[in-house]
Length: 358
Image (cartoon, rainbow, N blue to C red):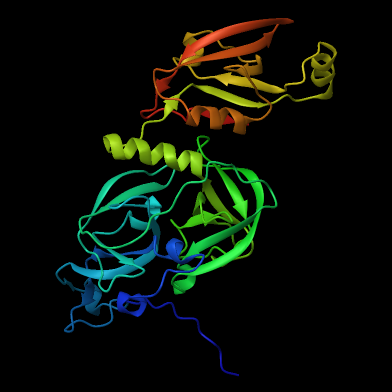
């Protein structure tokens, strides 16, 4: 029986295939806002000296010789991005991080756009902003001002599995999935088909507005199994706003490890005291703003800036709205009394995440 072998081929796309397509249909302007991000990586190609034997069995115990060819550009990969204004494209940082030469292919443009510069990025959050230095006709996407709800219809647009400009439909499966690598990011989960090549593309609502950026596929074999993860729009907007203004994104730093209370006895005790907020400070980072301003391990967080706090995600999303130097007011329950503690947020350098969850 013949075996079917799946070969992944990097295709050099000619946008002429997509030129002059009408956008006078519901999703036309959306398609005309989404781009294919491609690139090349410089690699040294090593070949065996033809005068030598098989390097696995060098003659007379001598090491084989190899010749190094000149570095050459080789095709590296592709992903998705989308226009947010006339000259700027948003994508995932992991899409472009290894590229030495960038190309962008627009939906209704004849040729590859090669005059592309990187404005800035946040590797941890996995967002990058590119600038095209060429005036071409295109549309750009709008951000949704309304958070999607679990069960809402959603649409992913991108170039998954090299199937360019593919629109898939699903639902918002869940609105909070933690990122084990950083506590400053949490994801939305969707069952809309997201595959390799979709990274950096928009997740859209019924009105074609961006509710998030596709970034991650949870799968044992790199292919779609129903778990696509998306960076929510409020965080994406925060990152790109700072990048467009300053070229970089700086996150605020608080310095606490948070988690839910452990044990029924503590739960019953707090409930008897009328406390129905069960997020506890587990640890306070040494020399952090939290320590300097008086937060303690064991404090029960009741509210932050008058917002009731039940889960770590609420703290993360609150920090998305804050910057280093901002004051944040904590209401905590400690030793059977309420305390209000104001702290001034620091800035992340080579420090732990702004908050950590447990």
